[in-house]
Image (cartoon, rainbow, N blue to C red; front, top):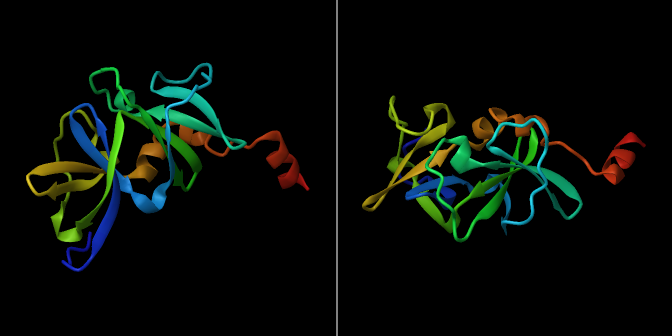
Amino acid sequence: MDCNTGIEVQLVAFTLGSEQYGVEIDQVREIIRKRAITPVPQQPSYVEGVINVRGTIIPVVNLRKRFELQREESLSPHTIIVQSGVGLMGMLVDAVSEVIRIPSNQIYPPPSVTKGIDTVYLRGICRINDRLLIYLDVEKVVRASPAGRTANIHTPRQKMIAAN
C-alpha cells in the first residue's frame, strides 16, 4: 500500500456490532434498507438468500454471520450492494454511517493475529483520530462466499438478451 501523505482512500463506513468497517466507495453500487430476502436452499447459514433490485437478482451475505460475530438484532439493517470481479453481491450490515476519506499513511497492514475475522478478508486497519476502522477487501469477501459464485444470476430477460 502506498503511504504517500497526499493519497487518500474513500471508504463507505458501516458497523457490525460495536466495530466499524469500511469498503472502497468505488466498489459500492448502492446502499438500500433491508428488504425481504428470498432464501436459497442448501447455502451456508451466512448466505441470507437473494433480493431483486430493479430486475437484477443479487445474492446477500450477512457479514455478521460470515465473520462469526455475536448475533445481536440490528435496529437499522442495510444492504450494501457491491460490485466485484464476479458480479454484484449484497452485504447485510447493522448500519451504514458515513463516507470517509482516509490518508493512505493512516492505513496499516492487518495484524498477523486478529480476533473474529480472518485476516485474508482485510486490506488494513485505519486509524481515524481516536478510533480504528477495519478496511475490508471486497473481492476476497465475495470470492470466499458461495454467494459469489451465484453473483452473476440474470433475470430471464437478461439471459434472453445475452443469448441473442
